Amino acid sequence: MEVVAEKIVAEGTYDLFFPILLLAIIFLILKLFKSNFLSESTLPLPPGPSPWPILGNIPHMGKKPHITLANFAQTYGSLMSLRLGTQIMIIGSSATAAEEILKTHDRILSARYVPHAVPAKSPKFNHLSLVWALECNDRWKNLRTICRSELFSGKAMESQACLRERKAIDMVNFLGAKKGKEVKVGELVFATIFNMMSNVLISRDFIILEKQSVDGGMKGLLGKYIDFISAPNLPDFYPILGALDLQGLNKKAKEAVLRMCAMWKPIIEDRREGRKGNASGQKDFLDTLIDNSCTNDQINHLLLELFAGATDTSTSTIEWAMAELIKNPESMKKVCEELTRETNHNTLKESHLAQLPYLQACVKETLRLHPPAPFLLPHRAPDSCQVMNYTIPKNSQVVVNVWAIGRDPMVWEEPLKFKPERFLNATLDFKGNYFEFLPFGAGRRICPGLPMGAKLVPLILASLLHSFDWSLPHGNDPNELDMNEKFAVTLHKEQPLVLIPTIK
Image (cartoon, rainbow, N blue to C red):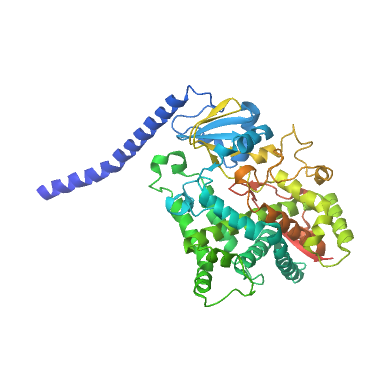
């Protein structure tokens, strides 16, 4: 009887443990929520929709928060606040608000908000990060200086031109063998950009275009990683749950990172031990990092960020550009005529890009309508500050809705129409000087890879259009092409673009 009684007591204790733990967590959340609300309720926060108890505005966000918040801005103004769980998010949705956040108050608001699923959230790795560094400290400045001088300076970009052209030719040759067959544009573009980057960074290809799966599975792996760090995650709303990883997103993101880094791990080891130099015989970026005494962890994190930043955003932009041109045959005709006229049917070179204003206008118009990162990457307020006569509380997440700004009817005539002509006689550029057009951001945290993106995106787009005519499968009507978006850190087409090339 005593044994049975002990068993009943043990089972009862076990059954009660989790409800008690859950009640304790809810109590702590309510206490923290109440404490935050009382401490901030007297502050002039930017306006926003009324939050629900405990959940705050989480239920309002939906699957496409860039659209939701653009709609909210019409009611609450261009600077809003939302409460997500116990956390506060500040959203700028106009050129004026963007300038305040990214220029006027750039010094204090250039800190980075890091989602819990990002491996660089850990102090062990955050100091190695260029993209997710919490502060613009000396380590971050050193990394950025190395990247700017060795990868993105005018001299570096000029030295890489032949390499980018060679990879673009590989893509054209591959397409020549696919004439009349369906092509997944995003996969092919991703593979081409990945090989462009891998040759600049490590002097070798990682993806063989002729394989049945053209991207070798890397696009899917990187896509999963981005999905993991973009997904709604409980610790981002309730930091008290940070150590639990209840949804397993942090674990999955780390596993994806390890799988991607495994590709170049043996190359780093060989290069470091002098067993095998790079194939080109010339110094590449990996050599530079080793010469600068970077550890393997530093190299892995920097290479991962450079690959992810260059491939995912550029692939998205080119896929959207092709989709818009398919839907707008007059624009397609103009850009193709320009290519024929300016290249004189010769092999396309990067030097031709300066003589292709309409192509460049098509790229800018695509970036306006479909910015690769609709919220850029989130900033953080390490201290309270005043913006547009409102208080931004300490540790708030601060984002700029560049998707909404690019479609603001107060700034853009016919904002929902694909109209490259609007950029032909305009001084607007995307270098962070015009706050109504910020696809790469502005201020200290402007995308460091902007110079490279400004070269490879138009080069690949021009290469696709220079040698081929494109059509939808089964003679489908371009007007019915699905243009729905899939929200994540990068804004992709929900349905991948599939087209048929025909050699001109």
